[in-house]
Length: 216
Image (cartoon, rainbow, N blue to C red):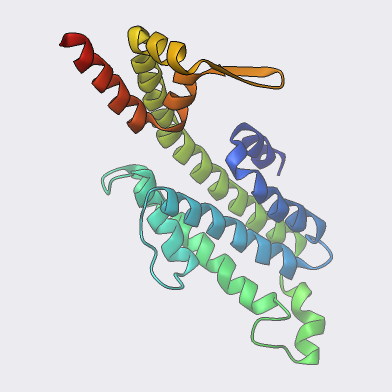
């Protein structure tokens, strides 16, 4: 699970998922139903976050299988790519984990006393480790694929926007001379920096108006 933790450290927006990792580790041997419950939740959370970020609708109460399949679509894989074909198998793993969760969880559908006593023995330790490792591999792939594809685009867009700010020196100086610099404790920012970073549309509007006045 250390590899997944390293990815969460690299991409901080996913850090809340550590909660699932801790629960999976803590109960792997003592109460596997809790581990598998959190494994399922981990995959669902990753898939739903990816779909939400890419505005891919999931519908009402989607199965984990549907969530994982749509997350691959949201990342941008086409039907011709090998990874898309593999994703069907990965989504099936998610579905099987969901089914197993229903079998061993003490709170899903209720259990008889005999079933409660025997539920943990249904899955041996080697199989438990395999299922958890499979979950981690799928989760790590989804996070890295999403971040490397769409995180890179966000960086490029920011770089382009920053270049637009740096190329607009005349307006920046005018705006800073008019409104000055803002100091907050040990930090200080010019008015043009604040406008650019908080509301780029307003920045572009004011910059355009400044240019039109200068041309008159």
